[in-house]
Length: 233
Image (cartoon, rainbow, N blue to C red; front, side, top):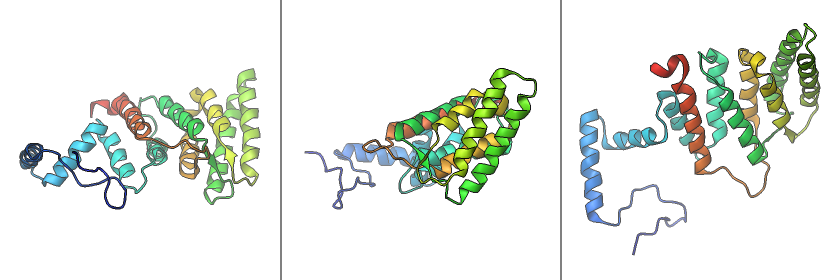
């Protein structure tokens, strides 16, 4: 019979449990060799191997380290880190649209919403106004699509200014993606996304973030950071 994977408190064990002594010895000795070659402790060597299995690029591994250091790992924390990086440094020749689309998918899956009475709402509203101004500037040539995008963004901004404990955000994310060519180079775009990731909370009952969800985020982060100017670093 195998060892119960649950501890006495009914939570998953965090210690490593082996059903066969030969497996335990193999793990111990292999871990010791890896630690010796890397000039580190066995625990640190094993931890590094775990990070290397969930992410390939240094940036994505850093996100994994931060995300999994929380009691309850969340994709929202990972997305916020990526958007903070983009707000500070831009895309650097990479394409961040798949990251934003992945964020929209998570928003729809979990029914993410925000509370517009939170402290972060002020910053969010200010940055959204910047997005509206960018779109208004791009519509000065009387392009119908650009004018429609600017008007839509302005209307969505009015919703942000209204106090709401359960404000939906998919329409705002869609607005950003529809004008992606214009907004992708603007830091205000990523600051808005940072606010959404920091403020969002799930509302859909019975649907929770899974291990597959988090690992999919790290794969998305890997693809993003492996491309563009930093891909060869």
